[in-house]
Length: 280
Ligand SMILES: [Zn+2]
Image 1 (tube, rainbow, N blue to C red):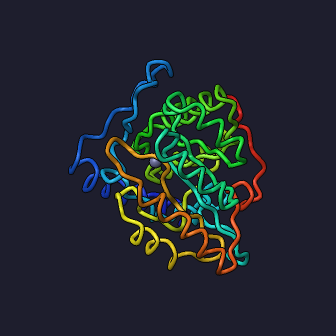
Image 2: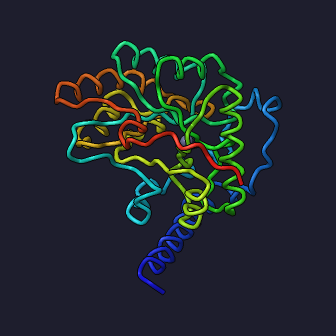
């Protein structure tokens, strides 16, 4: 066994232990891979299959990027004063349009990781994200916690979301962010072989906790360095309040600009050409 294998085993053990403690024991038994329903039946659904962010979102710190530098990206070039704003869990008709308004006013392009089953709930918002020139990535179809899924079930979640994105005219180009940043190391290589790269983050606004403006600004601004990938949300689960995100966003953009940062989408930051997922 080489050191990389040992590290993988150690990481897997930690994931299992952490999940057992925080996710499974505390809130629910791990859901079995949900059958992927047809989009039409899902039009009204807005819950997240993996639970709310606070239930299962625990593995963001995990430095998979160091283990899989080609396939897992979380930090751009530390020598360039460029940052990427990223927004997960949209589209919705409440917060995503407000985020888009602010980005348009400020002339900033960002990256949206959309949940497949939500596209049919806000088709005009999807269209606007594209028309405004933002990047779109795949955030699974059902937003499950895939860290305990088989490779096959992970790929099915990702492929089904890609198909739904294409139905709305969006090509994610192999750009994938796992819900909660949680993924088993064993899933990364199969995903990479199918043409996907995983885009995590280096600065977490923690906005899904319903924080206020000052808390979100305080979580982001002191942490930003050259190449930071900043995580926000543009939609939440039922009852999740992202007012703080909408209020903090213009302040964060202005502050970073004043410090000399420019903004890039993830494709721009990593100079990644869209990589269409291969079939089979
Ligand atoms: Zn998410």
